[in-house]
Amino acid sequence: MDIITLKAERRDLSQKAKHLRLKGHIPCICYGMKKEPLVLQVDHNEFIKVYKKAGTNTLIRLNAIGEEIETLIHELQFDPVSDDVDHVDFIRVDMQKPVYTKVSLVFVGKSAAVADLGGTLVHHKSEVEVKCLPKDLIHEIEVDISSIIDFHTSIHIRDLKVNDKIELTDNMDDVVATAVPPKTEEEILAEDAAGAAEPAKE
Image (cartoon, rainbow, N blue to C red; front, side, top):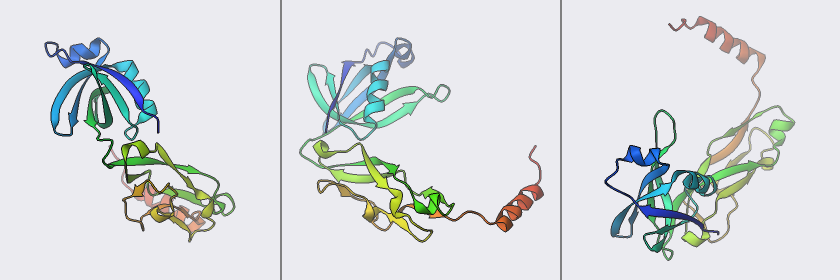
């Protein structure tokens, strides 16, 4: 898979984090592999571009302090008011050892249970955990919902298609997606009546 490159600089600890953010930088730390943590900063706009491409399951090569470091985004902290990225934790990756990470599911195709029978598709999972070498990481897994032809058919973890270099570590019997039938008139009326009976909230 492709590796995305991001420039990082040693953080100026004489400046408070809020001052760094005002100057367009995000404070961050890089740790792991029993090495001394690196206290860094990255350009805000460049990081946002990288994060939109990489998410948390694509390798990011940090060009930092004269070395290139293979990493994954381990954790993000967000400003509670603006919801902007406040801090980033990068974790070092050993390219020779498997990693565990979450991969997003992308639902494709058309379900007959929805298109022909009027049902509603229900997503029970939006991501799954995988184990693989860093070089074999994938950004997403496509889930073809065309196999959901009625209200008794479900897609399970075991049905997901991935290459033999990737191991799915979630329970193979977990349901990924299914379809539920449309509500009957009686069910709709009963829900309306229950809603009308609820006391009004102040």
